[in-house]
Amino acid sequence: MKKAILTMMTTAFFCFGLMGHARAMDGPGGVDIHGFIAQGFLISSEYNYLSHKSTDGSFEYNEMGINFSKDLTDKLRLGIQFFARDIGDAANNKVTLDWAYGDYRWRDWLGIRAGRIKLPLGLYNETRDYDFLRTSIVLPQCNYSDMLRDTLLAANGLSLYGNAIPLFGAGDLDYQVVMGALYADLDSGIEKYSNSALQGAGEIAGAVVYDTLYVGKIRWNTPLSGLALTADILKVRGKVPMLLLGNSVTMDSDIQHIRSGIEFTWEDLVLVFEYNYLDAENTTTLDANQMMLGEPAKLESETYYWGASYRFTDWFEVGAYYGVNYPDKNDKDGNDQPALGQPKHNAWQKDIALSLRFDIVQGWIFKLEGHKVNGTAEVLSVDNPDKSEEDWYYGAAKLTFSF
Image (cartoon, rainbow, N blue to C red):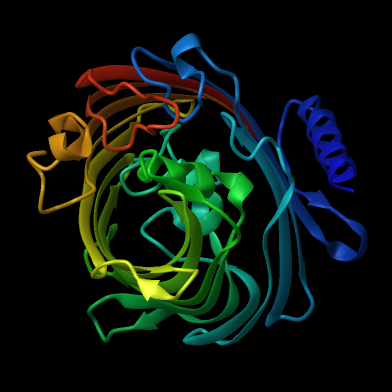
């Protein structure tokens, strides 16, 4: 069934690509059909990054999706998206149900969604699949990890939301509240990400269940035209089964993310800033006798980035960002890393990116991107046992068709 769906998606994209321009399809019964397919290329000077073979150059970096939506009434809308991607040796073009929900908009200030709902995290999590909305190929990995994309994109549950709520001369407000559970597909990248973080001391040993999740977000569209401020918080609890130093254990995780963002648009110029603080507490219990292994482990991390883009013509746009990641905000200098068998620069990663975007014809976009990186905090140990080089580079190219 999955192969059949994937074949259907690929054939549809190829056929519509031959048209040379993009448009939404009108399906039976007035169903709106949109989709995208993208092929990328990655190459890195020192480390296998995003793909496990990027030092040799890798085409294992692609994505495709097709979605269907239908307005049943002027207030009720249904939508669903199927998605597949390849990111090195993760995901491997496995077709998944990306999101699917019913949306009832009672008033501008109150609507409800139910199903598999996109999580309103940061400025771009809900729109990260729509390549035509941004300049960059690789979103700042400090805030939008591609390895965790499938886990953090959506949750199964309920959502309340409101848009353009007037603030009596002080602009207007959008809000969302999501309650549900995360689905962690181990094939999608989270298993590889987690095993790398364990640095050889253990590995994931079963289904990861994040059964309690709450997300709240507000966006203030200020009276200053083009300026918006955002803030969101995520709280999630779950259980992670692991083999740790040869023992079967369960890690109870209690995680909290707090994000804030600024977005300013003036004509063809877009400026952004985002800050993310994470506070996690993990309690590990030995399965054999339910004995807790030591005190709960606490971790605080900090990430942020600045970004800018400018559209010079209808077909050419330039963007850049500078992202910083401190996985342990209390060890920004890396003094604790040697005790973990890692160089000091494993305590941070600082990424300067420059992106070029070319809108070839309607629906077709080509992008080139270069990155100068200092530090190895986001470099996965499972693909890079030696992380001794502090400064390194990687580049990307990507061709996207969407309709």
